[in-house]
Length: 353
Image 1: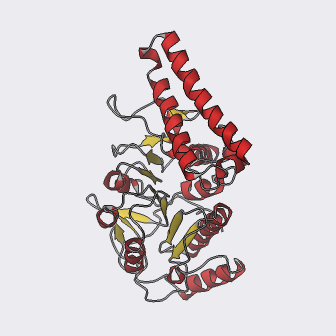
Image 2 (image 1 turned 60 degrees about the vertical axis):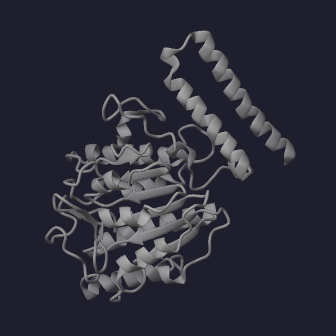
Image 3 (image 1 turned 90 degrees about the vertical axis):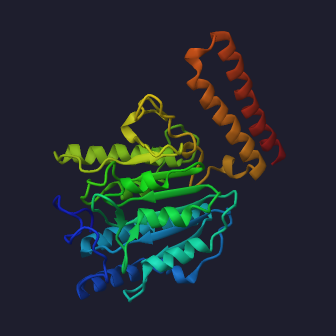
């Protein structure tokens, strides 16, 4: 059904109130019909699909919609993610999409996370689509049954050492970034504060960008998490300008573990030119190396080759950050060495095929 026709609170109930169901029978009918029209693409989380061929896994959580138009949009986003996972050969579990029941989705999510390996090399993705709330102390993601708090999710994810890609695409989501930020994680929220409480458009635009060749800013035939973030942020801003509205959402990305986050409009190309403060590290280094759907060239690399490639690319990035501190000849020599090593890596792989 698309976006809400007017700006208003996403769910008109007191902050922190839990959703006990999907609402009216009309809403249940809308979602049931939409579910059928998706031709069986969406699965309930209870089916627990096996790990994907890529080794990566995505847990997709759709929260309580509150109103039918939001539920339809959330379903649209879920289908976009499902299609992207099919292309990427991800394992996929989905929560909140089965027919309305008295299911406690909070407990379903806790068990789903508890069953995941902690120390894998391949990323675990967690995507939250829905509404949020914030009472000045605790941010929540609205589920059927008890809501998910940022504190609870932080505790559940604390044992994980594998790469984590966490997207909270709901309103009032920024406090999740502060709680979840850590080494070896990419955390994205649709808002920059807990007080940005209106319905967010960023989530759908991010999901569309994942498989949009127009979002491939560096023209390497794949869209990284960073590229999708930048493009979705840009298109969100364009929406508000076109509609002559005050922007009520500003997405943040954190992948350096400092919990501060960087806005999409702070990037020029794929490099952040602005920081939350002078001492903050630059965000984007991890996010630029993670894609949902890899290019054929990237897909042909072995796990060991990808690790070597990632280390070389990080070295190039870090070298460029130090350019102003180095002699020109020293900088050029080191940059040439790194780029030649990258070229040899891809050349050797092409020869092996």
